[in-house]
Structure formats: C-alpha cells, structure tokens
Image 1: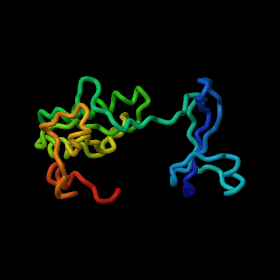
Image 2: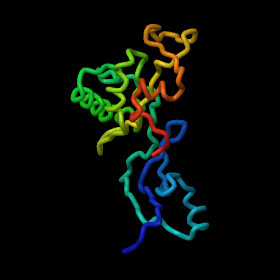
Image 3: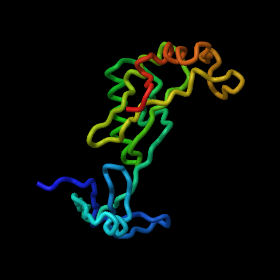
Image 4: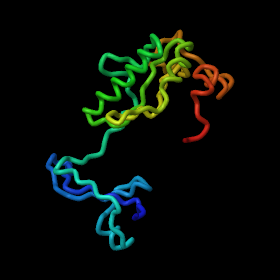
Length: 183
C-alpha cells in the first residue's frame, strides 16, 4: 500500500480564465495545506508525483464562492423561526439549492430582532453540509449590538449595548453559541 503524500492531480479538466475562455490544464493540489500548486515547480522541488489522480473527464474545475452574508434564499429567511424541524428543513433547502449558483460555503445572517430569538436560531446554525450541498460555516449576526446613531435600517427597539462586554454577548446569543477558539 502506498502512503498518500497529500498531492492530488485533477486531470482532463477545463479551467476558466478571466476572459471567459476555458483552457485544458491539469491542476495539482496539496490537500494537507489546502493550496493549489505549480505542478512543474512542485515536481522538481519535491521530486514527487501526486499520490492521487482525479479524472474530471473534460468537466470545468473552478473555485467556489463563499457568501459571507446571506439573509435567506428560496423562500427561507434565516431570521424567522417557527420550530426546529422547519428551520432545519430550510437550512438544508438553501444549502442544497445554492450550490447551483457557484456558492460552496455560506454564513447565514440574522437581522437585528428580539433578543429571545437569537439563542433558538443560533443553536441550529452550527456548521452543516450534505454530500451534495454548500457548507453552512456558522452564523453572522447583524445585531443587536449596534450604536443607535449608526443603526441604518435596524429597528431601534431591538438595539442593545454591551455594558458587560463579552458577558452581554453570552447572555443574548447564548454562551454555547459563541466559540472562544477556532475548531
């Protein structure tokens, strides 16, 4: 059995260029570091070939988009909570349908609203994906901690200050919905 060196070669693929044209080109990827490599430079410096080759059979290989502020899509609003089951169904629907637009990862966004809603929704917005969907990376909250003078369209009755620093955030969002460190 051959051990993996972490190098993957995507072969027989078309790469989109800025002018909209496609070029046939192999792409080397280091899956341990998560980076695209210069194949020739990597071959001569590491003296290795990819341990895994993926034949794309002439399909297009392109990076996915990350939507960092998505309030909702496909008739589902991330800020509206009825019950856990329908909310999870909505999350799954968005994740599975948005992939067709080129979005591969997203941050569901909650608008400023009543403070009682945050813990319910945020506990559901944990990282999530299915084999055929985009990945929900977590969540993005637009409030309620916004300066009244700079509130824009945010409803004043829902705006809060954070007089106790991080404890104010824990009290509103729910302590278990906040992470001190990256995973």
